[in-house]
Image (cartoon, rainbow, N blue to C red; front, side, top):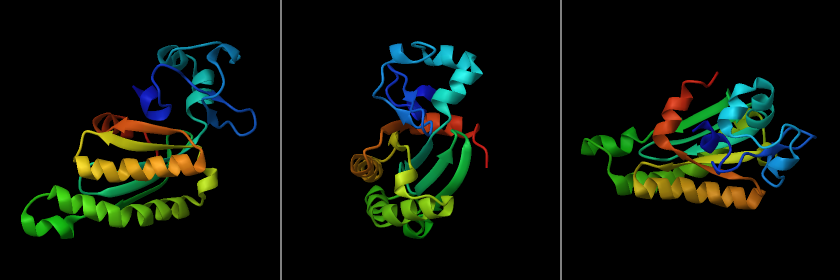
Length: 178
């Protein structure tokens, strides 16, 4: 389900604007030069796949358990930055993750981690074409922090937001390039 990770709604693909190649969900698949395609049809045609899937800069946010993370991807696979704030010092004395403490630390760390990811990637919020956030499975309180931050950013920037299944994200991480 790469489609749901990169593009959002698995029921519809998105098209690219002619200026920068950014993803937009406003145009109809019937207006695309190649016509409406399912994800699997698009994956069979490298030219369409490159045009549709891998011409965006995405800010990804991950807060499913005890690490606050943000990464910036370019062209779907190239990692421009990956910042992780560990919570080992918080949970170590208890011998495991304490959900309430994890949520509170995410609240403290989410903004600095996102800022550092953007600075490390050499971009600003205006350069982001879309956002992705872990939507589950995970600790409810931790997921709430990441989802709330991502929703707020997406709304403020007027950018699309995609919820990503945590387990599927691990699978697709194998296809990323440093």
